[in-house]
Image (cartoon, rainbow, N blue to C red; front, side):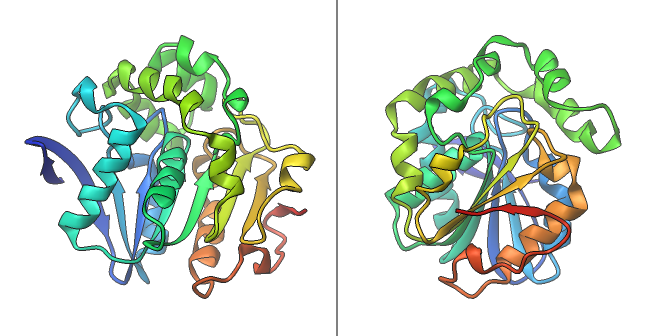
Length: 262
């Protein structure tokens, strides 16, 4: 277990591999742990980091740090303490919102960004995320198999208030503007059967900036990295292999997935 201290509180992270840095941010249910297969798949050429955000996993649970702005600050201080310069961000759910907010607050530091299960506006978040207990949430969002065990084991360890506070503040940050104004290479990934986050409409896809692209995993729910692990990991590696500044629209169409295009 690796950790840093921020405001005398523990922030847990794990790191695998060598090369250019890639930061993974988990969602509203789970912790760093479900990123492990993707980190391992990318670790041959990249140094992969996964962080437990405030209130999740082995990071401290202090409610004064549960706002989205505090989660962004956690990422900022982590990068500073680790001496990480230009890097790639991969976020899921809550982590995708934190990733886009960080990029907005710190332009020029993120080389490219993958947002998995990102709600393009606050109305695309199912209210059940706020209403259900963690145990009910994992049953709602996940099928039972060995691949989903990391989420099932870690979800109840989170502070329920961390989810509530971040979900409530979605109304105040301008989710719609975050993706419409993005300038860097950005890949949006959604699961066709995601019960928590509504998939983008054709009209929304038509408004994507030239630097952004959307891919739909037709056999996935809220966790495409667990529902279709091999396919997801191939997509991540292809995205990481793009030249800096290259649009993800240039990714070669492959049989493993179908792309949603403008």
